[in-house]
Length: 150
Image (tube, rainbow, N blue to C red):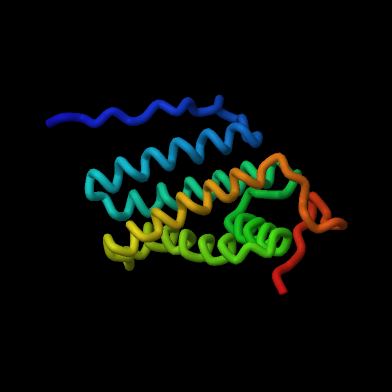
């Protein structure tokens, strides 16, 4: 049996939870999602797809000083970014990718679904990365308290 070499995006040191650390972890999960797809492991691919986006959201939240230590916070971060940018892709792609987290536990999605969401995740990760190091586009937003979705 041939063992496939896992890409070597360096992982941060344990306990490092800063912006760059989460960006590196996101990249590592992106690589692992491809490996799991190639291995035919639909459920593991689903969770790696979700994790890549989750860590990119955490990276952006760290950049802005936002809470990011729960699934609910990740959803709030995505909504806040949508409100700031009014870019519907954030809202729609997040909803798509969030389904992969559910799929890991519930085994509901087909290979076609997982593959389609992988492309959504790649687009969302790139979009989120482009927002890092940019101040919020709507003045008056608190960096420590997110607005609730309307």
